[in-house]
Length: 141
Image 1 (cartoon, one colour):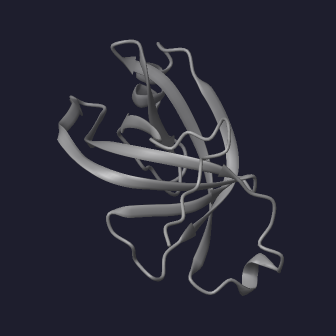
Image 2 (cartoon, helix red, strand yellow):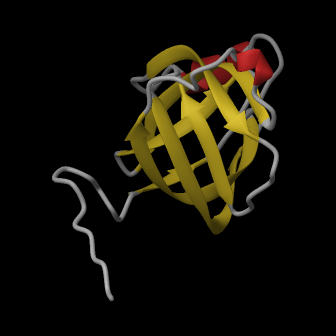
């Protein structure tokens, strides 16, 4: 017997590709770095994401974004290093991401074995050929 299923309307089965670079700084970022990023329009948000850290599922990253979406990303490799002399240097990462609506774990977050909450301030800026590139400023990744 063979069973087949059709994806619900609106579900993106191929995911969304992204090219990301992260610079993670404790505390406030230096003025020179803030000024460099200030040249680009940005969407900044603060949120808490909850990451699945045990078991490790390399090359997958699994998290609950801001308590409203379950996100699964698969690492696709790196095209190299993005070096901004005197400002920041980071490895670019290619990812494929799927996002699904999420409402609750159904229990206190502190009791979730294998999951770790991370508070972050994230800025997403179009710095590469008009495409949106994400950079996390602050704790987390």
